Amino acid sequence: MVFAFNAVSVWLIMIEQLRRHFKPKRLHDFFISFCDERELYQDGPILTHLYLLLGCGLPITVSFIIFDGGFFNGEFSTLAFSGVIFLGVGDVAAALYGRAYGVQKWYKGTNKSQQGSMALWFCCTVTYILLSSLVCDHTSNFGFCFFIGSLVVMFFEAFT
Image (spheres, rainbow, N blue to C red):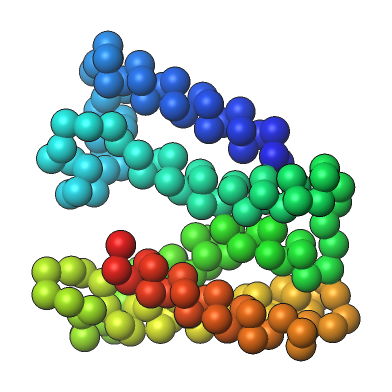
């Protein structure tokens, strides 16, 4: 996983450079189709795909480095996959629930709702606790950490 993450990161950076400097129409149109309004109207690089890749792969890579290339087990395997939990579970829950039931926006001019953010926090916390209970016996030691970590990510996602 670590090798694949790093290889794909380099590959995407090279493709982005190719797209920016040589501007092949089909490649440029493909990247533009995935842009949101913030990246669509600027002349700089399109970085959303790299951010998503970093968000999913960086916790695994950091865990791999910390454990000196060894396998992580127990609660640490849950922490290693936190990027996938936050982006794959939390961000999707926030988008779906916020779009369906989001009434109170965080601030004027945003489409992010407090209801969607609470769905992110709840789903990430529950996923952490369930996944952790499957891989180790003493999950109560990290329950508060999951709660606080999900809360931090909720506010980070709401205001960025």
